[in-house]
Length: 150
Image 1 (cartoon, rainbow, N blue to C red):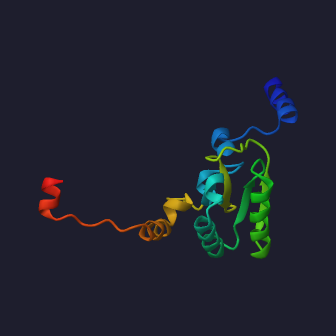
Image 2 (image 1 turned 90 degrees about the horizontal axis):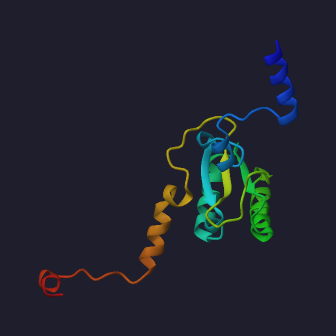
Image 3 (image 1 turned 180 degrees about the vertical axis):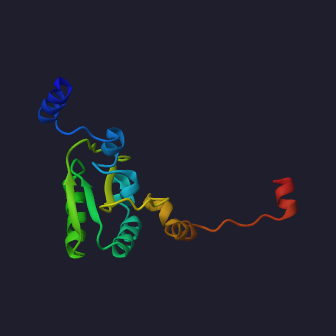
């Protein structure tokens, strides 16, 4: 009986224990299996990644957007406006987040597990990267002798 009492007191003092707390801290309070799409703070500044995010948002109208509360306010405001314009639910998360460029800045999540195999915006929409690379100067194909003597 004292163990139950101690557990009850601990729960009141520290809150309910988290299941897999490291994963929940990394994914802004949710689990990896609930994510449709993830963007780092650096990716959020890229306009093609922003377009990819809007494409994914239109596919999942019931999803919620989790925004990193530590990122620059101008960037945060830009995505809040996008969410509002698209009638999407969003939450600004301030617990266990950082403002590093490689930190998650945005997650598009569901209420239940969706088990998306790829959630990174640049891996999920690679054709956008191919278009960027095609705008650069195309590489010349070298002939047999060019490769041999080059």
